[in-house]
Length: 120
Image 1 (tube, rainbow, N blue to C red):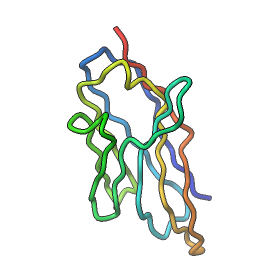
Image 2 (tube, rainbow, N blue to C red):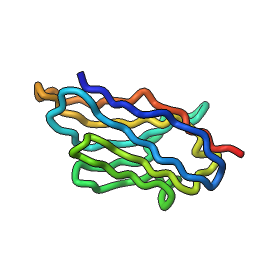
Image 3 (cartoon, rainbow, N blue to C red):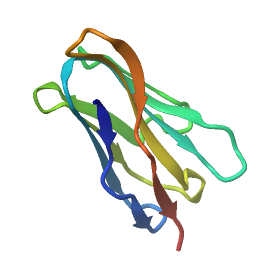
């Protein structure tokens, strides 16, 4: 069974940095696009960053120039480096992946999400 595992979030002061990671575990044949989403209290879930299997990235306008996504395909890992954090970045962050498992079954998976709090 494929799972996306995200180690715990955290608290950081405005202007600070935080690095999120997400590992895909289980019987995996390949992973295509990966992404990070977030959901702030009272708001809809939104796409923060996407990264293709080849490493091409796209970002929400609100995080461009501050957040960077990368991936290590050999380790089934994806990362989100968050710099110059603002209080409005406070949200539950979710990783997402388009996975083909060892039975060649294709579906998107979600991590459970972890809270990132930006406050003084």
